Image 1 (cartoon, rainbow, N blue to C red):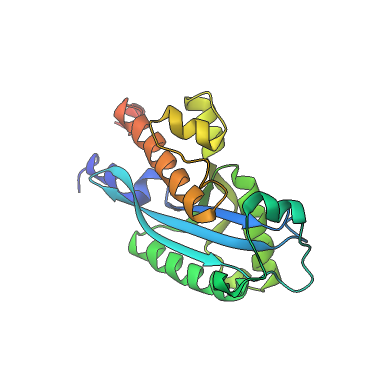
Image 2: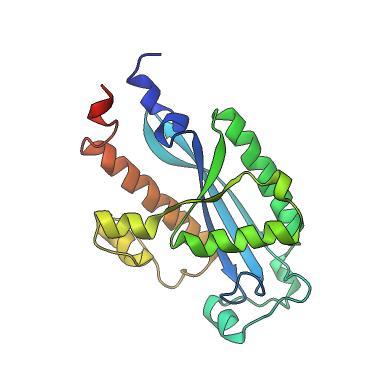
Length: 213
């Protein structure tokens, strides 16, 4: 493999980190006391050096025992936690499935650690980390403990926008506000945005860095 072709690998693009796009819906804003109610994630892949969406996982989550449920939060995200039609599972079961999948992909792509990609990533990261503590799954956690890739910050730098819908529109990505605040929909749009931002940087000559040659 020559020096240039190695930059087409996912492991080379992010210094050995494996990016995973995540969006969650919650029962409030406090990661210690409010519950994750829905989680969706999309893995990524390289196609001849261009970043693309790969596979998706999506789960509805049962609130953990003792969690605080905000009526305002439920009104905002439209989740009815009392219906069996959600097919909700425990956060422990969801995390086991997610961590198993990501760990396999990290090895497959010769990466070292997964990194959460999200819009306003500190929010999603804090809830995931609290869920890991709550379920005592620290030894199985594939995610970096503090590094995230935040598409809000990236969009602010590149597009002058920080709202997901406006950032998508600026990049020519369709966005339906009626479907927003669903983890499934928002993850898909965030993944599309992240790929386009990363690929645009390559397209204009910012990757690979010229000083490496």
